[in-house]
Amino acid sequence: MAPSSGVTGREIVKRAIRNVDPDATIYHEDFRSYGILDGSFRHESVKHTAGEYARGDIHTNTIEGEFSVLRPWLQTFRGISKEYAYLYCAHYQLLRSNRSMERVDRALSMFCLASTVDAHQGSELELRDELALLSVAASN
Image (cartoon, helix red, strand yellow):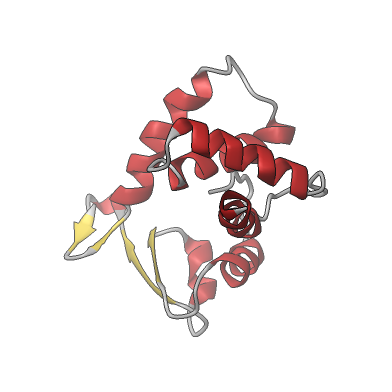
């Protein structure tokens, strides 16, 4: 999950290559730029503008439900900088991905992670790498 604006087809492909398992199917709303995925990734869409919200197993309810939890969580910060929005989303994603852990264990793992990972440079956190390191840090 990463905040985006002005998303282009090129950006969608770049993110898909970096973050999506090649065997996965991407479900999305009928946004033109997703057409660039044809031939590279399996993908299906629903057309909200035509009143279609689900077609069998094809829907975007999972991500919409996740955003319904993310929005109130972000409100606790009383405003965030667009420049650092990706860090807030990465923090949220880390918490949600490890919500089955006890709070103390999760906090200790995050502390270990923070002490083993250099400060992130760039505009988007590579969370997959940090999640892998989190499990290593938790086992140490």
